[in-house]
Length: 107
Image (tube, one colour):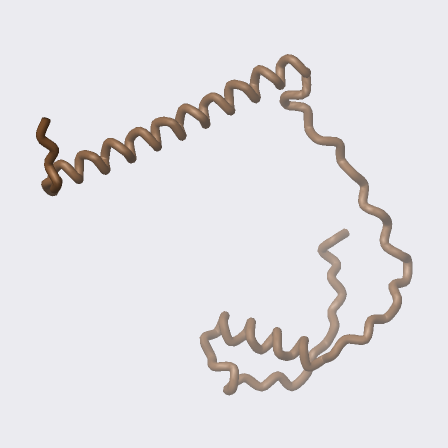
């Protein structure tokens, strides 16, 4: 029995492709098996297609306590966002005022 010590390029390419084919074939089989098993278990337990129960979030306090925020952090975030959106360098942007606006879209 004679064993070659070197593989040609074509042999190494075929070996690699064979390995990749085997690995991805097994991954596809596992994915299909998972889907099939999930459907079988879902039918046996009767929970397939049943949405998860909705949890109601706790109500927010009527009057939230005022939060002391560092305005410098807010300005830095705004400046960074404006710089990215407009393409203007951060050192060229000057923010003169920051106002709080109530959001009425939640209603």
